[in-house]
Length: 140
Image (cartoon, rainbow, N blue to C red; front, side, top):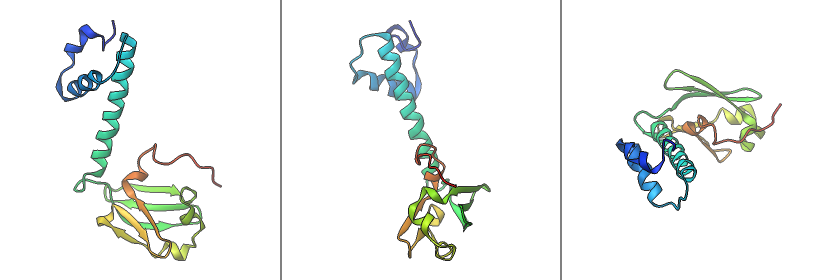
């Protein structure tokens, strides 16, 4: 019997354990493998939710304090001291814009977002740090 088998379900405690048990109550599970797969999926969903909550709590949210561009990248200085570079190729309007156009931006939401009026483009800064948000794009 695995970690999530019926006899061991009582061993789950705390908030995550309660969420897993609530999740499993709504599932049709036949075997211990079904229970484990369902519980693992629930754990992954909880982890993603916690990461999103951590990144988007307004007071502690990652924010841009400065933005600049070069021929291939959009660069951000973040409020936690990191410098983030993302390929312009990820964003068609950004990719096709001139350096001059990209210099005309405004930080919105105290730096949670970047808005280019002339391009009608907005970027959410915390989402840039989420791996699954953007598909890998080939660029030169």
